[in-house]
Image (cartoon, rainbow, N blue to C red):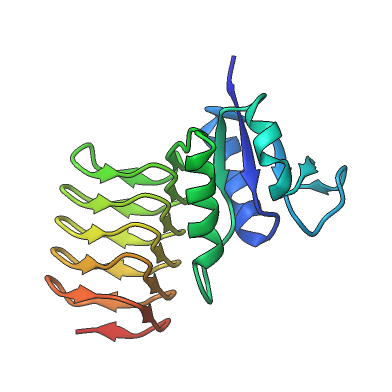
Length: 191
């Protein structure tokens, strides 16, 4: 029997996470937590069962949860939810698409989601509460610190360190063995 998991957030990132969880087939989605939708609403067939204020009560019934709120302009909401869930003693599993490749020599922190066709190579380290989006590449010996979003098709070259709370836009590329932080614009080259 699969373990049940709650998802927090109801936008586009949540829909992508649903697809990964269904394909991974390790968890059964028990419901979605969204503040601005009425209970009983559906997202890809899954029911909205409450808002953030319901989390303490839901903790009595459920132990697994994942922050499914995206990170584009700011990660403030993702970070706040992550800490709130930790305080409530939820389990925040790592979710990895079976269509992604993660080296057995890589390390990935809790509450991180690795989307379809992402590649995380040997000795790479990805922190907690990160998004490694579709077709992103985290090359050997790279470090992606906590609460960071590596967008679709971005390339983090070998030995690069991406500081916590950063956002690397779609198609951005880093030079190898550098340190980057903050907002890296889509399509740019960080040298």
